[in-house]
Length: 283
Image 1 (tube, rainbow, N blue to C red):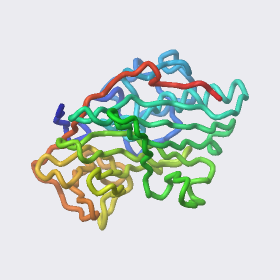
Image 2: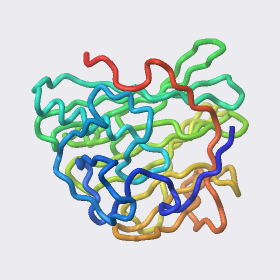
Image 3: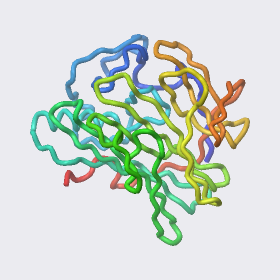
């Protein structure tokens, strides 16, 4: 199944509009109370009923970067608020929906862990993505090599710092089902530091690559999907804080970056809603 996604932020149907210059990651917003024309949002931390901790998060979701492929941000905020009131500091878990490859052979899904503390700047969010062979039952893990990625095989002091956010979720298979594209969202709580990386696993070469726009000036990049023009490239929306219409860039597997003219992002695969998707048992 292929989907053609809009490339510009102002053409994406999202539950809120955020002025990037006021981006504040710990923000909690009640979507029903925000007019679509509102240019910026600054709301104190509170948890509306729409994002209660036991919500399954299978409907409309907010996203810190206004991404067409949102991370479970409602759950992150609700979990932080719950821990702050209950003082139960154990880890919390979330399982994403499965993305089935076009040939029906593989499923990709993520498990997200949040280690919440009373002080937001000390909380941490990490994740791991799984690839399951639906014919054999074999399971493998996919990890990014970006600055805040939590890779158990590689020591990374930056990833262990309090306040880090590193969420990896599947975005799209290739049309031939031989590659998968995932979004690695990274940031720091209580700051405006946030950006995306693209993580690509190549089944034929059994290789994982992590890429982002290079040799251009930007503060925030948002992964959009595969390039419709060139399937060996991915598209990002990337620019500086405050840009109303940041440009779209095409990035190849080596990181070479060029402006994308008259190109559109594409995603492939079928999303499956398993009964275990959403918040998990606390311990």
